Image 1 (tube, rainbow, N blue to C red):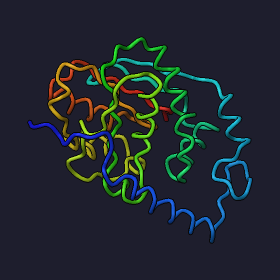
Image 2: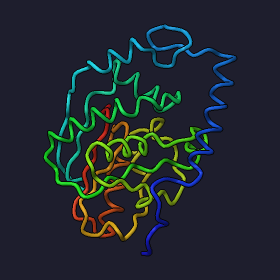
Image 3: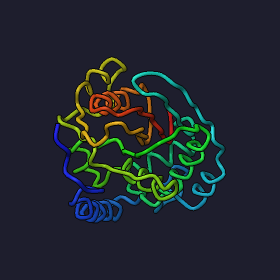
Image 4: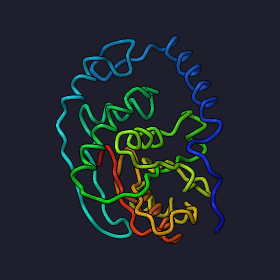
Length: 227
């Protein structure tokens, strides 16, 4: 299989993000946002940010196949769940460094030896709607902190999939089966997949299968939350 096109991020991400921000601003003008704590005009207020910063890690670290290991920073609930939703759905992209800081602390506990970070790719439809890939932002932050290269172009979705959150466990597995293609540049590398939330692990496992088909030595998954 040939290499995928080189590059750290999609070339049109900036334009998509700008258009998304304008759209979010217009929506907020008509329908003012409300933080989960009830404060108006904030998707995620300063008080909730402070609570998030002091929210303890509840790491879950497991092993298995095709993923060689899987770790998360805490349950997808409470202030952590609120932060992930604000970051993922409400455009509060400034939360990326705060959430990535949790990832980095758990990563240090795993003692995994990693060559490359790869964010889980977002479906084209969701990327068009959202304007950014939240996992890509987390991966970039992790790369800055850990000094491990991050490539978003070494795996891609080769077909559209339904939104996983709306599906049952078996439906999730079928939904993403053979939905990813990896570049042969991952051969012999130990990969760290980054995503926001893991539920059944279907998406991460399918990414791991695609990477291992191209010769990846090991594939690990790291997420902010688990549900």
